[in-house]
Amino acid sequence: MQLAVDVMGGDHGCGVLIKGALLALESNSSIRKIYLVGNEDEIRKNLARVGSLAGRLEIVHASEVLTMDEKPIEALRRKKDCSILKAVELVKESKADALISPGNTGGVMAASTIKLRPLEGIERPAIATVIPTRYNRFVLLDSGANVECKPIYLLQFAIMGAIYSREVLGCKNPKIGLLSIGTEEVKGNDLTLEAFRLLKASKLNFHGNVEGHDLFKGKVDVVVCDGFVGNIVLKTCESLAMELFDWLKSELTSNPLRKTGALLCYGAFRTIKKQVDPDQQGAAPLLGLNGTVMITHGSARERAIMNAILITCEAARHKINDHIINEIAAVKNILSKPSIEFATR
Image (cartoon, rainbow, N blue to C red; front, side):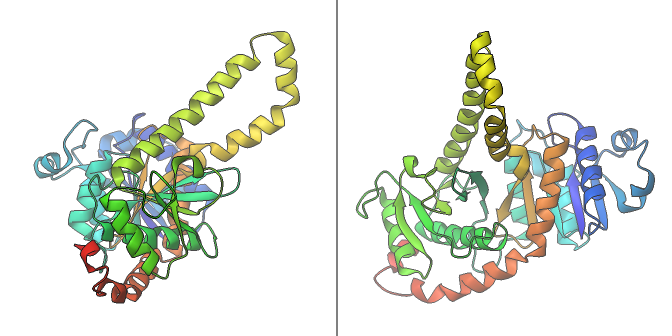
């Protein structure tokens, strides 16, 4: 396994990403090489002591960085030597089996789509985010790659999400839910109404519409929506979880009696915090491309980067793309039926 890591796009400097890469190398001997993509001088400053791991690292110099506030397409045209493009090119040239980047999400999406191209039968790649609940872990997609969608995209998202849930998360027969404003088949907008018909006609384990309050009840394993809605859902969930923990901590430390009660419940709080910790997952795959692409938070620190790399190895090992191509081809016949053909346009 050989991986490319864009070390220039994070909020905390390349040193944090390099430390995360070293931790991953230490914990997974199947990683033969990690390409550290970015400014060579900065990378070398943070590689003073690598010892036996030096032989499994290679620096790929990139003189430019795509910043978070730049418009992806315009910036990629201007910055031909940016770290994101260099990392994508390593995958395209088959030097790396996958890439991990904490950089500009739109930039990663654009560069990967242009250079790697979507898989056969896939019209748009999608970001698939794994979200933990008390009962299961569900895959939310699209989480922000495609603001405007067609019904056929949502069907393809469902297929890709089901494959990821099955192959990587171990869910034997993932239940698919279509995010809408009501569970009834007639509820929703034009996009969800037409997507419902496609999903119902497919051979997927389609549960039907789900509402926002269903997401954390363990009813479904894959939640499908357009990237605009998905990104709002994702960021709302992340923010709510962090704020609730901070609020709870404030209340539980407000007086000695509550501190005593909090101490008695420490084990339970620690378990829940571990379950919802975003660093555990580390990264979200950009599914549907001719290559494995993983996107991490710009704020990710060492442990999150390590986990992102380990999860990337797992996704690549399961050959997700082969499954996607086969299963997309298997549902092509439903798209030619006159009763649902309009929904694919």
